[in-house]
Length: 244
Image (cartoon, rainbow, N blue to C red):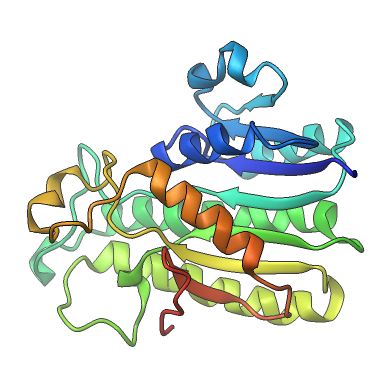
């Protein structure tokens, strides 16, 4: 059986760690993780994984990380998970009204949620292009759906995810012409019990707050079931299409 490779980028998030724990147990598989912090992976469980630590997510660091993957002769990369995402931090909070909008905060959110994943995609496509199918998942959010926006707010986060979706749609049109083996998936994980969602979990209905392990399991199944069709998909944790 041919060895297949999974690449997880932004691998220090809770969902990324859950993905890694499930993928590492696959037979005939290779795992590559990329993160600024790889402490979680310093254990016997991941002794066979390739760990790539980056200083930051500037384009030069991204290019060097992809070059390391290339030099490692990773065979048949069949799935890539780009797990970057920022909703809030010590100096950025989701806006509740127009008066809360800040150019500085918007730029930071846009860089993390839109520009950085796009730089990874730009650097990876030459490595991924080939004859065997490869599925690339970028973490998005339902609130990035323009059609589904009925309550407003969260200006920066919504806009960053909507922009990412548009970029993926455009990239899919191009790749359908020159890299037909690559499938792009924009993924909404649902509300997951992670630091990103902690401040907002009180309003989550019973049964709708998911563990990272559950989301990882669902995502891996969705990727396995998805066909390479030359179009970008925007799906939730159930595998259901979300309107763009």
